[in-house]
Image 1 (tube, rainbow, N blue to C red):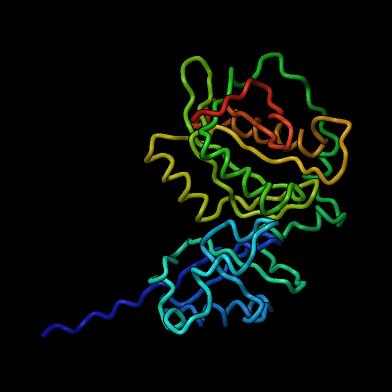
Image 2 (spheres, rainbow, N blue to C red):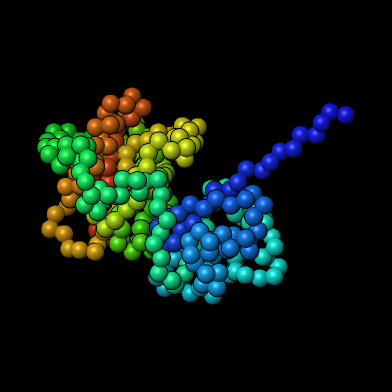
Length: 283
C-alpha cells in the first residue's frame, strides 16, 4: 500500500479587537476555548478571570454589560470545544473586554510609530512637511455614493469602540461609471496604528493582496480611502496638515496607476462628510 500522507492543519490567525485596538493572535488549528483564554493571558497579560470574549462587537460599546455576552463564556460544555466549533476560524475577529491596564502588542505598522511620537524625521517626512498642495481645478470624481452597510460598519467601530478618540483608515472598493461617479460597495481596514491626530497603515501585506483579489473577483476596484476625524479637541479647521497630505499622497499614487479610475477621499466625523464631491449613502 502507498504510504499514508499526513496533512498538518495550518495555524489560525485571529484578530483580537479590544478597547485598545486590534491585535493579532496565532493559535493552533486544534485550539480549544480554554486554550484560547490561556494564550490571551500569556500573550496579552490579561488574567483569564478578567477576560470577556465574544463574537458580538456590541461587547465593546461603552454601555455594554459583560454578563450579557455569554457566547464564549467559560463553561464546562464549551471549554473543551475547538474554537472552530464555536464559529472562530482563520481571520475571525474575536472581541475581548477587560478591566486591567495594559500596553497593546505592537503590529507591523508600529515599526514607524516614532513618526507619531516625535521621533527622528525621515526624508519622506521632511519632504511631506515642505510639500505645497495646490487646489484642484476640477474634482477627481463627480460624486461619491456609499453602500449604507459598509459606511455604518466603519463608523460603528469608530464611534462605538474608539469613541472618536482615535483615527482609523480604510480603503474603499467599488466602481466608477462613465460620468465619473464613484460607487463605494465595501470598506477594507488594513493593519494600522492610530492616534488622535494621525495614523500609519501597513501596506503590501498578504491580507492587502487578498482584499484586492476578492474585490477584483467581485468586479470592484480600489476607488478611494476613508478616515475618521477625532473629536477629542475642538477644531477651527476642516482638515489638518496631516490629513491633507495623506489625501494628496493617495490621490497622487492613484493617478499613476492604471487600475484607478478615480479616487475619492472622505473624512468621517460626527459632522457630515468632508469631501471634494457630494456624498450619498445608499440603502
